[in-house]
Structures are given as structure tokens and as C-alpha cells.
Length: 114
Length: 111
Image 1 (spheres, rainbow over the protein chains, first blue to last red):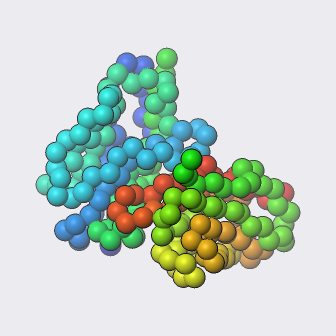
Image 2 (tube, rainbow over the protein chains, first blue to last red; image 1 turned 135 degrees about the vertical axis):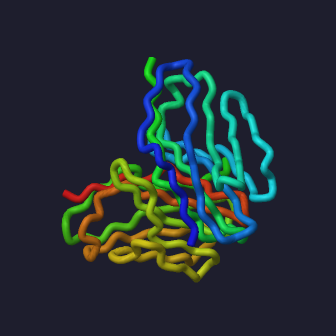
């Protein structure tokens, strides 16, 4: 069975601090996909990134970066120089190879204080 | 613009009433999903459909029903059998392995 764990329920940081959101996953599949979504107060989930299990390269997009490590089954998300607009709930998700059986983690609520 | 629309944004229901939440997508995605989110909680899968005229129960299907007569549409009916329907409902669609894309959600409140 697939499972996604986000151990940090809530995180508070002061603006301009760096913050890392942890995601640990479990799957028996050798091919799978990992995702991060952002849910701002408006409620809509915003797609941030997709990563397949064969690509362990870290990715950077502006202030966002992702660290994928198969050895520890982790797909952590770092926001550099956080801003108030980064305040949201962030979900990590896992999908099997065929794109079905999408599993979400419980989410981490990030509050960035001015 | 391509995307997923959900209507209404806010919905109020009296106890004992059935209500239907709309979800439409023009992304030409094959699969569509309904999730429920309670305050401060994660997403729980209600129903999903991989293809027209076919759908499967998710983790919390009791008290809900769906139909998939068209590729673009996947309405969710919250029946009177759902004992605690007040929640935020999110519809999503996907195609292949690109991940799920979400609509803006419908906030349902039972009066």
C-alpha cells in the first residue's frame, strides 16, 4: 500500500527565513511519481512540481527547491527567503506508474510572519 | 482558457436534502476525481472515474453518488444518507502521468 507522511503539522517562520517541508513516502512500486501542491487560503490546490522515481536530480525554481532521495524515501521541499504570500498548506502526493491511485499526505500548514 | 470549474462556490443545504455539485473540465482529461476536505485536514477520495460511463468508489463513498455521462463533466450528489456533509469539496482531473489539476472547490454547509 502506498502512504505519504508529512510529519510537520504546522510550521511558523519569520519572513526571509528559509524553511524545509518534509515528505516521506512508502510504495512497493519501482516506478512512481511524486508531487507537491500548495493550498492557499482561497482553497484551490495549486500544482507545484512532479518528479518521477528515476530522476533524483534536485530541482530549483526561483525560491523553491526540491530534494528527492530514494535511499530515504523522501521528497523534501525548501522555500528560500520565505515571504508572507508563501503562507499556505502544502501537500505532498504519490502516484503509481499508471497515474492512478493518487495518495496525498496530511499536509503541512506554513505560516510566514512579517 | 483551459481549466476546471466547480459550481457553486458556496452551497447551503437543509438536512434531508440532496444536493449536486458541478465539476466541468475542458482539458480533455480522461480521469476525474472528487475529494472531501474537512477543516484542518487532508484530502479524502470520494469517487473517481477513469473513463466515461465508469467510476469507482474511493475511501469515503457512502452517502455520495456520481455520474460520468460526458468526458467533460463529473457531478457529485451529496445525498441525505451522508450524515455529516459540511465540508470543502474539491474536483480534480488528470491525464496520464501529469498529475492532478484541481478546481476552485465548493464549500457545502448544512443548516
